[in-house]
Length: 199
Image (cartoon, rainbow, N blue to C red; front, side, top):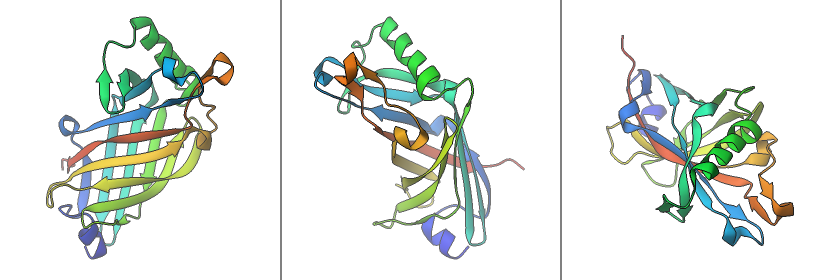
């Protein structure tokens, strides 16, 4: 396995898929503008996603896909604190409609896909850097996913990635003549656990 085995500890040559029970993905959205105190930062869940990893001699192929229609608001937040009662049912419907129709354009572009092939070692022995291409809302752009493997020998990874909506031709949401708006940069994070593909 060479250099690949040194980077991704615990993955032998072969094909892997997402272990749904141990995996989750979320997006952190923040607001800005002079009226930002009257709005809410958000936790947004990605409810349906999958992953396919193939490990070969000196090579790792990664593909992670998500259904755009499964990207839905979970709750408002203050920093890392959830504020479950801050959004009304109407607020949730409005945010979800805006996400699906105006941001992700889910009817036209139903899949969000990240592909990568060249992991490298990060700043610590258990950190992995995974540069790749993200396809979102009909556009493609290079992004960097940072992985951490908490336990050597277990194919479980904590991930985070920062991206700008404008990379994908998305105009961040604005209200009240721009006095309240969503920040261009969003943060994606989660836990991905892998299991071998069945024979």
